[in-house]
Amino acid sequence: MGNLTSWLEHYGYGLIFLSLFLEMLALPLPGEMMMSYTGLFVFEGKLSWLLSMVSAAGGVIGGVSLSYWIGYRLGQPFVAKYGHRVHLGEAQLARLTKWFEKYGEKLLFIAYFIPGVRHVTGYFCGATRMPFRRYALYAYPGAIFWVGLFITLGKVLGAKWEEYHTTVNHYMIMFGVASGLLAVVIYLYKKYKGLVQAALMDLLSRGGSHFHSLGKVKFLLLGAFVLLAGFVSLMLGMIQDFLGHEFSQFDEVASYIVLAGFGSEWHDQMQLFEKLGTFAFYGPLIVVTAIWILFRGHNRALELIFLIWVVLGGEVLNEGLRMIFHRAGPTGVGIPFLYTFPSKETLTSLVVCGFSAFLLLRHYRNHAAHLVVPAVVILLCLMIGISRIYFGMQYPSDVAAGYVFGGVWVCLNVILLEVLRKLQNQNAR
Image (tube, rainbow, N blue to C red; front, top):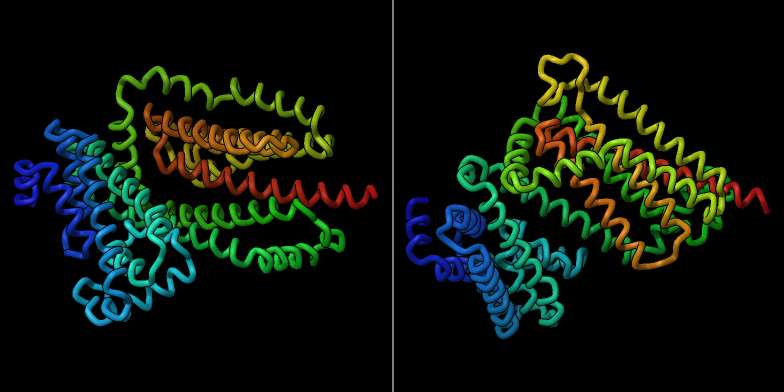
């Protein structure tokens, strides 16, 4: 690595551009390591963050564009015959063909996070005559996101980069895999939407004869089922990691990133977000939601009962979970009853804000609101959790567990509410 840092110090942006350009042509060069060291140099003031981003993104975009046109001009037979020289042999070509048939061009965006795939997708897409505009639509934003993420992480980690880079790369690969799975789910839903809906309706119909005509609600239920499955999977994984005492490295790296990314100048804002994680904020929000239900709700009594049930049940769930897992937080050392797994604040914020947003939007047809409100809820809940880490009140794993357990509780109750609502409407006819 001494040669790499020496070359980077001497040749700077030109080396960044050239190395990533050549890597995208399938040369065996360490792209993530180059970008992470670039971030480290940005941290040390030796390079400009903006110019580093432009150089890295330009190199990747140039490389994937050239590889596309090479594949396009030479054609699939040539690539199949000589592609092994750039790690694109017949086996890789068949595998990529199968992946693109299943997952579509969205694979281009996440392919940068999958070792061995990002180097050959340009050749493959050109050889298979994918329209260049469609190729660029996914490949270029993916390139910018990939280089931006690694350079920024290198900048944030700073002097701790060499200590943490292996762990960060591990989580980046996990992120790529998770993104790929999400893309698969979305693709399969779009392609087999009719079959999935029919299967869901058949499953629901076994519970009662009234579910055969759910109408538009079936889309809401399907989305809630997908989210519930994802949260349950994460929940089981977190419980397994908790029992195996495997959170220490994650907590150390995540805490360092939060503290490095949000310096002392964020102190006042973090105090505000910390207060938003208390009943002083949730109380008025619950009242506003209840008033909204009274004026706009279609099943007022049912929705009010569920609002109370979800909020109080979430509190009981949180207290029970923290007593079961029995882990003292960073400020709870020596204090026997201060347990922080899962985080009460993140679980409650997701439960109250998430379910309230669902009830508020359930009878409001403004499309902009349906995009803005969920984004605000996600950002608010995220910053509430970051504030707990920022002030050393909870571990990052506590915060993440709060989101996951809260997500399970919200999705479960959304499904139950919609099913009961439909039953109530059917019985009223």
